[in-house]
Image (cartoon, rainbow, N blue to C red; front, side, top):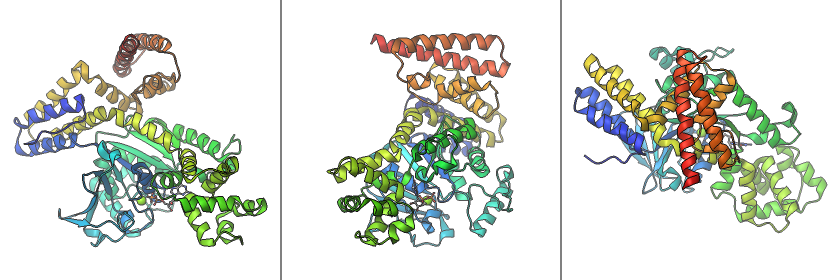
Length: 521
Ligand SMILES: Nc1nc2c(ncn2[C@@H]2O[C@H](COP(=O)(O)OP(=O)(O)O)[C@@H](O)[C@H]2O)c(=O)[nH]1
Ligand SMILES: [Mg+2]
């Protein structure tokens, strides 16, 4: 047997528990535990979920830094694709019958639109890329919900009917169920974290998709511990449509994202505005020196013409001017009007700006930096805990499937013993977070916010809500809150709240210890 590389001490502890139990249960359960063990050795699985055309594949490309996921609605955008690390770039089509076929990349390095196999025979795609980002994060691109394809809606309904989870498939006013399609569901079922892509209006079905992520993951509802949302296409937000906006697109998008965060409630850590298109263009090398040159030429046009061009996409490509229509169409495709406007502003501020300089401006305008930072803080830095918690949940599911009560008991006891260990406290905190975010344990909203903040990151100042706070002040505050939660645990809380409060108290105490150690060392 090969040794499994795990993500860290918590996953390691769960892996050891699995390995130990495997020898003490029947074949079926042992196989289930073996699966859990294999999963623990893999990078964190992040599913990108959202409605069709919300820009999921565009964001996947931006995150991976390569234009590899097709972004038109073609056949392959309807197939789940797992992007994972490999030593050689290759794509495999995994068939429903378990067979595999390798697939060559298109000349431009993307996954080809034609899979060479009938779609109904395809289970999903596995794309292996020699990309550093994927070393500790597997990114899963999903087709998404909101299918207009009647047969796939029918299939969705059939699957939901069969599995008895109709609760997530409430009908739209027009009678069509809008939920995650079956393939997306099963991909999401394997995911340990989710990046949820919404656009301007968070509709009821966006909310439902979030819940169906929970339903699909069984014991692992999406919670702030493992779900982050982006408001994509921030460039298309109309400032007039957003109350209190100062008239700028980015300000309006930020306000909207804040409001959506409140609407989506504790299910996601946060909603961050992003322009996936600009991020993709800036990150994947699509933006070339000749594109920069075309922008300089546009900048050189007289002001009236420039202003007319920027009124609408139709005018931008259709209006008579010296820059060839084809060149303009390409700029529009790469940057859309907002990106073109940002680039022209940058040229006005610095007429000598280079292609590299413009690319940086596009990157900064895209909001991707903050998304990557949060992905790191929310997921990557806590991959060990998230994977371990997911592993424990899968073990529980394996136990529940067993018909032997003694076997079930043995697994449950093992899990309990593991959770009781002091070093497993992070798992307890993740559990508490799930309890409060799912509403199973209710807390007043200020306390709820505090717990979510404390659990949603690894960064001490972020956890304390004290960005830029001095170390001394942070130490003091951590102790203050530890004490407060200890008394809340014993006075004035329900038994369920009290259990959560004990965990929160301990989390603050451990944070206090860590901060104090930090200033001494
Ligand atoms: N204006 C604008 N268009 C975007 C943005 N992100 C994606 N798109 C476009 O939206 C369309 C759908 O994107 P795609 O990634 O295929 O969506 P998916 O179905 O969710 O994977 C494509 O034409 C993208 O170029 C964005 O931030 N701004
Ligand atoms: Mg797509």
